[in-house]
Length: 177
Length: 177
DNA sequence: AGAAAACAGTTCAGCCACTGAAGTAAATGC
DNA sequence: GCATTTACTTCAGTGGCTGAACTGTTTTCT
Image (cartoon, rainbow over all chains, first blue to last red):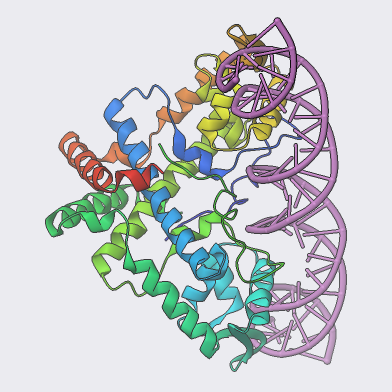
């Protein structure tokens, strides 16, 4: 599933203006322009709103268990041991950044590094017992009060899913990068 | 429409771990966990994917015309002159940040500050002629190849909108903050 | 009316997520 | 068996963004 890390976009071009302090990604969610097509505009706005709510829910949950978002995300991803490079690909960030995240989680005793048995250059991250426990708590809270989606009934959810699939199957290549 | 600026979440809590370098927001879009409900999981994933595609489209368009995302967003918001505080509320960032954005756009001649006639503490940002032109170009390109939504036919769009409305009307308070 | 409080914007210091380059060690490929 | 690629680390730097302190203006309270 495609996503963009914070700087992945800004890499592409710096903009006319130098030395600008910028409002970040979140801003894009708040498009209020005179869309030529009001229905389309509302759909876009609501899609953004929904995804923001999901993000907010995730972050709140992470904070609840004492983690930051990327820590939580990494923890969740480590259901099975993963090589650091794989984690970087998953997070869509530079490997060097994973080093830092792993450092912090290791320092707290939530994971440890072990050499990859198949490639001695590589290291695999695996959860400690404490890490497993924290991961379980995190997931439990994440689903405890699932947002938005949970208010739709079964047929509505099926319908929504079908629509999203349609939208993405056509423009699929673009969406998934 | 609710959105979160990058740090608005991290303000809430710092996480157990100190000095951690973190993978940012974008990461959240990439949840691959053993959701108890596979259909719900797919919906969430696809919602994220769609919103990411929208963001990417917006950013690409901004870059095309030589702007960064927040510059573009501010420009778009300035169809009519707006007080800086209003812009900050719109961007959901600190007023001091709007100062910097306005500085950069003013330096490039895309907008200027004028005192608010009704409150001499306040300043209103308004587009110059060049700013207007750039805004027009930006919007034109933004709709030139509208992403995703455009692949749905009329009835599908109506249906999607209806579902999104339902989802948000129930959880509305949370979603819109 | 006059003092106190609230408020709009600016300046500035600093944080933190993230990148990119340089370095080390191990694997791969002719 | 040497050159190239690959996996991680280290480190410096960038840029978005916050928060506190300050100026000047408006509102509020008595």
